[in-house]
Amino acid sequence: MLFEAAAVCINTVRTFYLLILAILGQLAFGLSVFDGFHYTLSNWLGKYINVFLWLPIANIFGSLIAQVQQQMVQMDINQLEASGQTTFGPTDAAYLIFLVLAIVGYCTVPSIANYIVQAGGLTTHLQKTEQVVTGVVAGAGRGVQSIIND
Image (cartoon, rainbow, N blue to C red; front, side, top):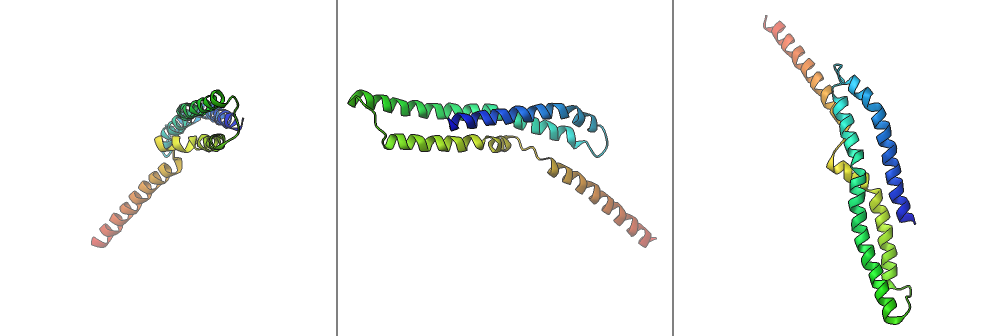
């Protein structure tokens, strides 16, 4: 039950983020035409794609989990056919541990999406600021050097 709850939580948070990003997309597009805000559109698009990838990544992860679950159920069916009853054994304990790992895996879906599309806004802004500051300092240095040479 917790396994399914983790999947539902990821999808709910994803839907909420996409809704907020869709609402703020017009603002990012509008601001991107002004000097100093050129990075906002590419930053918004990167974040939108990042969040949008959560569901496909979760589906791939879920299909891998389903394959292992299918094998575990088949082992229980074989045990039931062989002895007429099924008991809690090492296989069932491994299955429970596997489900706990699957819950942790579902919680890592956003970070996996971040590996695919890195949506860092502050880094882009700092690079732009660094370019401006470097240009100003270089211009000031050339101005001081021309005054000294004259």
